[in-house]
Every structure is written in structure tokens, then in C-alpha cells.
Image 1: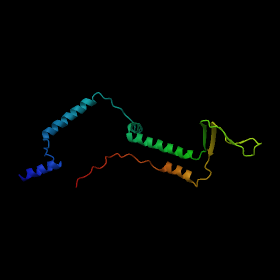
Image 2: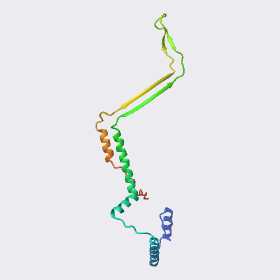
Image 3: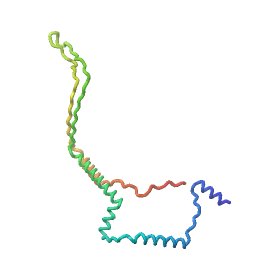
Length: 171
């Protein structure tokens, strides 16, 4: 009676596993024989390929997901090195602007005297234009650009996890 209460408590916690029976030797032999017959039947029509060590290594690299991931990491590192090299090149930027405002009447005042023409204090300018050309070149960076390039070339990229994260344990 006491073991039934323990089983019920374990079921409520979700940790109860009913007892399992191990297969008998006859069942194991039958399963092994079936697997062996299935293996022979499946490989009967397949052709045998002979590979050298270099050929086998080349095929393994072709189909390996790990090799593909390493190649992608290498390409990403090469691109970051190119980006660091670009910091040594001059940067050129060009911009242009156009602004239109609503028309406002000119404001003029006779400042120089009554016989002189009036001075325009606020002219009526409805359209303005602007251009900007900028060239930048790092003359001295204290070794920051070359250090950044070396760091990006030698710093390994983080690898993706190949094993699942540990599951939380109940205490």
C-alpha cells in the first residue's frame, strides 16, 4: 500500500516511469536477424565505390556542415579585414540642397538719408541653393587602423553551439 502512495506521488510530480521489461533473448535474436536481412536486401543493388584517402577526405569536406560553416566564418573574417582596410582610404562625400520659400515682400529703409536710395534689409529670396564637397583622410590615428585590421584578422568568430543547452534540473 505504501508503494502505491509513493507511485501516486511520483506521478503527480511527473517523474514516475513505469517499470519496463527487457526483451527476451529470442526477441533480440529475431530483431537482429530482421535487421541483418534488411541490410543485405538494401545493399544488394548498390555499387561499391573505391576511394583513395584524398578522395574520401574531399567528399567528406564537400558534404560536411561543419566545413561549410567554417568556410562561411572564413569569408566573414575576410570581409571584416577588407572593411578595416577601407578605413585607410580617403572618404569623399558630396551633397547638394535646394530650398524654396514663400514670397515675402522686400523690406527697405531710408538709412543713408532722404536723397539716397533705400537700403534693402530683407530681400525677397524665394529659392536658395547649396552644395557641399568633403574629402576626409586619416593622417594619424596612433596605430588604431592597423591594430583594428590585425585584431579582425586574428580574432576567431564565435562558433555556434553543437550541443543542446543543458536542461534545468529540479532540486
